[in-house]
Structures are given as structure tokens and as C-alpha cells.
Amino acid sequence: MDALIHSIGSQDTDLQAAFCDYVPQVFRRASFRQWCAWGEWNDDYRAFALVESGRVVANASVMRMRLLLEGREVTGYQLGAVGCLPSHRGRGLARVVMNAALDACGDAPVLLFANPKVRQFYPRFGFQPRMQTLFAATYDAVPEGPPAPMLSLDDAEMRAGLAALSSEGVPSTERFGARGYATVASWPVANGFARPLRQLGTEAWVFAGVEGETLYLDDVFARESFDLRAWIPRLIDRPIREIRFGFTPERYWPEAMVAGEDTEADLFVRNLRVSQEAHRFPVMAHT
Image (cartoon, rainbow, N blue to C red; front, side, top):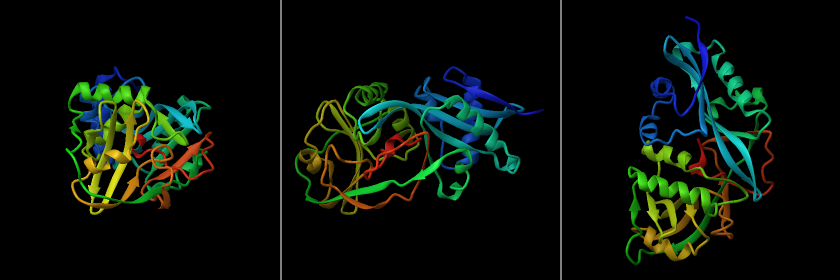
């Protein structure tokens, strides 16, 4: 039977199941099952899948996003889950689903983060590579006060709370960032990839964890700007000497220093002019 392209949306439960079967065959550690069970697949996410005999054999997904470019909000898209079953490679199927996904994006800005092994693939579709900067700050601190509570996104109320803070609060960065991406941030949580989610007061949550003498602050979701430094002793369980940021920290730590280039995932952009200043798209907003 010939393969046909299907646009899989939030209500297409049968095709979602086929998509969930496809993902771990291409991305060995990844899964969409818990994310779907949480109800996080909403109208912003659409998979353009090539289906053959009931199986998804190739796919390119599109996440609609509220992008922030130097403080200006624009509607854009982020691609993810791009690939093809090993048994079907070499037949140009990834190109077919990429074209279908990009047709759906029209002339809107598009970005994606790619494995460095496939960095030659995306320029064929008009994408250009852009450097992502690592930010760090030297900061000596010791644990003090009661630890900031941990939150679990297994709880539907917690997921709703994250969605509200992400959509209505101040973004962690306006240089090159996004707003309203809670369903993106919940995916690494559902897969066990994310650092713990901690509560700082009533209206601020952070993804953060300590490794060695370094505190990693992956993202901040807050109703209003606040004094992040005051909470550092309650985010750590041992002395630290450095903080590393998973976003451009111009709001919360403007004196942070450039600490190299992020080489774990290559950023590619299409119809998108990003900041000329050093920047890092929030890691919790990566699809």
C-alpha cells in the first residue's frame, strides 16, 4: 500500500497512537505516551506523518509558538520529531514530510534544534545555522533556610499552574525567547529528562538542580520579576561556586558572562532574524 501524508491533530487519537509507536524507533530514549496521557497534545501541535499500512514511517512535527524577538511577540513555529524509520531510509521520505510541515508554516518564522549529525540536512530547506551562547556566573553560596518545595507535573493542577505562569507571566528572556510554552516544557518532564521543578514563593517556579559545585537554572516561570538571588540558598543542597543558565539571563542576572557556545543541539532558523547580541533560546522551550 502506498504511504499517505496525514496531519495528526489533538483529536486524532488513533493516529496519535501510531505516532507514539514511531517515535522510539527513531529517537531511542524519547516517548510521547506520557505527554499525550497528560493531555498536553493541544491544537498548537501537529504532526505531519507519512502513514503506511497503519504505521507512521516518517514524520515532521510543527509546534506553533509565541516567539519573542527583542521584546516583540510574533507567531512562529518550531519543528521537531523529524525523521524516518530505519527500514525506510534512503527513499527521500524525510524530505516529503519536511515539505508538508513547512507548507503548513507558510512564510512565518520557523526554528528547530537538530542533532549535529544531521546539520547538512536542513539548509536544503532554506534553514540557516545560528550560534547559541552559554551563560554562567561565578557565585558562592551555601544552603540556608527551608528547601524550595518540589512540584510534580503528574498533578493536573500543577500543569495548569505552569501553563498560566508561562502564558501570563514575564518571560525568562525577551532577547530571543517565547511565551506560553508550558506544553513544550512538560515534554522533557514526562520523559524524565528535566531537572526538578521548584516553587519560589507563590508566583514563581524554576527548573533547577545542582551538579558538583554548579547550580543549573534551566528556566524561570514567574508572574512578575523577582529577586532570584535571594532564593539561591534554598535551591541548593550543598555549597556552590557557579551558576549556569539555560536561557539568556538579562532579566535575572544581567552581569552573567558568556561561557562558550552551546554545541549540544544546533539551532537552525528560517524566515527568522534573531538578536545580534549573545543569546540562548530557553532549553525548556526546545521541542
